[in-house]
Image (tube, rainbow, N blue to C red; front, side, top):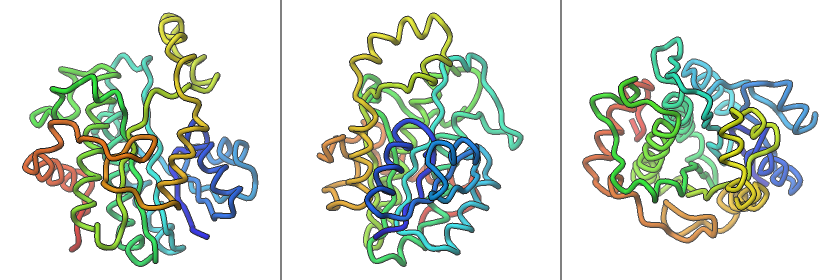
Length: 276
């Protein structure tokens, strides 16, 4: 059985995946912002590591603990997509919160854990992207304003960070592919939990309701998480919910773009993505 670290494990798909993996006998380490919420959702038998993905110091501390305990699999599930965040928020370190939570934190956690995963007999790192990127074929990384206020909306910030996750997964696969299986799951629209839907502004709840009813149940996508974590390794890095290989977003196909993003990401997180 594997030891699996999963971020964002106290709600949504991450919660369902953590439950599935624990039920199947794997040791699950839940990296969550709220320890109390995580324990209430997952029960007392799951180890909870308080981790704030928008805080690189918190991510570093979590990675140090996981490295000392030993992990076989990392699932970077945590993300923020709050349509109520109309105004750009900045972390104490000066990063826009969506960019920090959805890109820098996951990239830093994976980079710090790669040596540990490489020591496992079946080390794996799983990133999460979105099928919504298909609707944005011209989307690219905003090099001159990575997390600036001039273009910010919750939706733009979310997909900008998700594109970056695809690119970092490809970079890590190139650097560590001989030792760690790196994958990035292209998640379709997923049904929101009732509390998450209720937290949205009234107009957004009304507009989103039909899409929410037609979206995939989180339990179905949690199965894909589990298969990527402990099942047969997929062919290729970027895969859909059936674990079939997908075409990369246009911008992500360019090796120069991926190398440039790796460079600016490493500068921000203070740790290399490749071997030192």
